[in-house]
Image (tube, rainbow, N blue to C red; front, side):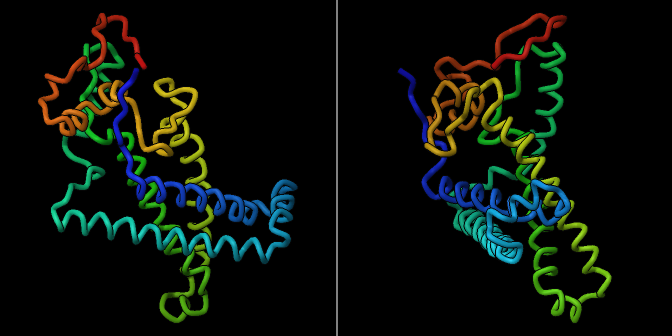
Amino acid sequence: MSTYVVRFNLAQRVEHLITMVVFVLLCLTGLPQKFYGQAWAQGTVRLFHDFDTMRWVHRICGLVLAASTVVHFTKAFLMMMEKKGYWSMVPTRKDFEDVFHQLRYYMGQSATQPLYDRYDYKQKFEYWGLVIGNVIMVMTGLVLFFPVTAAMLIPGGIIPAAKTAHSNEGLMAFFVITIWHIFNAHLSPDVFPFDVGIFTGKISRDRMLHEHPLELARLEGVPVEKLAGAHHGPPKAAAKPVKVG
């Protein structure tokens, strides 16, 4: 029987659920505004009764996203100030080294994979990409929500620029989440058919050992080399690289 490790606490799971629901609603109410001439967009509008109602749902969800982003960073900052933890999403030199180490492994130039901590370089790249995207979406969204006030504070030409940036960034976020995040986090060969860790808060110790051995070693208070069953990935011939799950 597999041993399970608690990876996400209740607060983190609730935060993810709220973000997920808000993101879906933002896409449902935002993309039809960008592609208003398409039949599917007009059908989506009818789900919200009318266009005006859909726009208000979009605005409210945008405010919720802005508030959750502020709360997320405030909690992280306070936790670090109180020295109750460290911000595991901050990129380090090791992350850049891991990129090249992983590439060497895929190309058969290394017999082992990098040892990852709580998050690997792909997860950090995605996280900070979404953070920057959120900032752009919130700032441009507020400009579009309050155009008259914005025009009194900033040059008027910024308002149509904000509309273009908001629209295009929203479309890019949709593709990043649906193609990059959902596959890597839930549908990749390592976790297929679906990873429920973010919903249950738990993943198996074997998976932690394979994907996050440095974090597991820290949780168990032992050197990573002494973890039961610890490995860096199976050995392989340099000429025949094989990616393993």
